[in-house]
Length: 423
Image (cartoon, rainbow, N blue to C red; front, side, top):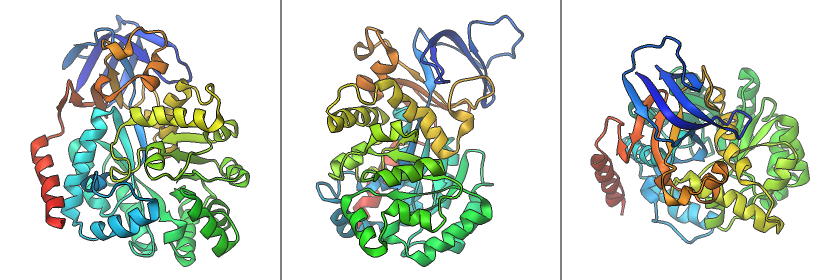
């Protein structure tokens, strides 16, 4: 589909906070023009949309989530991480079928779209069902293995890596494992062999809680980051999810290896895991991205809330109101996430880039006056400001209506049937 958007404001996130005015053209799945109106020949448009002075920007990248955990939203709350996992989450997850994960993933995708999220980095079981749900909806998903001692194997990880990097243009797959504390050294060495074989990055939960770090030091004499690095897992980059309790040595390893930190402030706050050293990470030059984590520990998939928490918690931690400015957080939620997820083709709005973008409604009181649009988005923006979400050149959400080839009510019904069966 060829779409001409005109009369818009444009925040490209291409290394500048400058707001352009003019037009944005999408031909097929690519952006072909960003900026003033052009008189050059162009194809016949399938749609011409008046943006009415509203703001185009790159879509947010949810760089860590477990989409199908929508079935546990508000089911297992107000518990510390280990009790939450072992007594509530793991027993319920054991009851899930592949078909359950298919429907629950579609529910999460709908919520992503309402929050202006155009891609997610999803770690969960049954990748074939997640990939199927995403492709059918037209949503971009980067899958990552949750390999551990109870789920999957190194052989299955390699098979999935080869399969889902050839599955569909909207789907890609990264090597990964759940965490140090759930994965034996033998399996980790198997993952390291794949890292070397494919020269591939690897991702995992890392240093989420103080207990996790202390127990790893007791087992191996090293922090999770240092231990995993000693096994050769980070030779070709990758990243860590959470990274709350990181030492200076850990940050040095992340910088040296070109690793990304994916911070999850909503989940870390709700589970009382702590506040990540975002200021120190920024000063170290580490790439930072933002994730919601799963909807069982957050409990919503809302990038606006996460952005506010990233900066707000950093200010509290440092006792410095100038810490982690809003515009830096906006970069984490877009370009930083794209870098962490290997999505270099949809990190900003520019000619030739993939058309993964959103339109923000500025004609609402929480966005006025327009003193500083980027700061408005982080400090006062909300999901209610998302007017349109486009992925790969297709409008999947517009004016509160979904265009994902599925009846939303059927998805809601399926989700309630799934949790009802398990109780």
